[in-house]
Length: 237
Ligand code: C5P
Image (cartoon, rainbow, N blue to C red; front, side, top):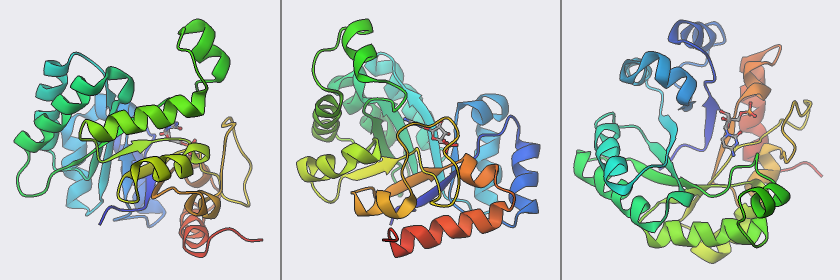
């Protein structure tokens, strides 16, 4: 089964990430490794996290010509992480090739392929006027999720506000991965479309990614446990 709560390890280098996990007794929790840490440390950081039994979501958001993405995914498959991702805007052929790379490069356990629909940093106006993509943002996110599913993706990264519609369109087994999570008891930082863990779960998220609500908390261990509790118990009314 896929892990449900990934801690975003947004640190500039491994030593800092390692110290954080150790000091706050978070060994073994599922983690998301993004571009910052991976570009600095390379595949070695994945091996180190695996030695400490962390399930891993490798968040590199590939978007290139299909063959290049396939070859890159073959390399990523060798790292044997749980989840990795591409941009759905790369198109159906690119997503199919990405899946092919993961399948061909994997051993017994195949890394799940997640497609980013539309970044939560994108707004309606920018999508329509700057990128000249017509339509409503949430309709386009659902359409991209369907395209990703038909191309072999196992799920999508989406806003909590689209997760329910995507589940309806793509079915219960298609994973919805949601960032922009804040604990009910903490402030929002710079994220605009935020949701608490319980709210996300009740609105169709299968997996959440939580970063600063934990990493910047006064007591990160307590904050992480609180996220698990809020996720397990659903939203307080
Ligand atoms: O600190 P915070 O909980 O906002 O971190 C969210 C994590 O999820 C970051 O690593 C960020 O890169 C990632 N993310 C996001 N919005 C997306 C996709 C990924 O915030 N649409």
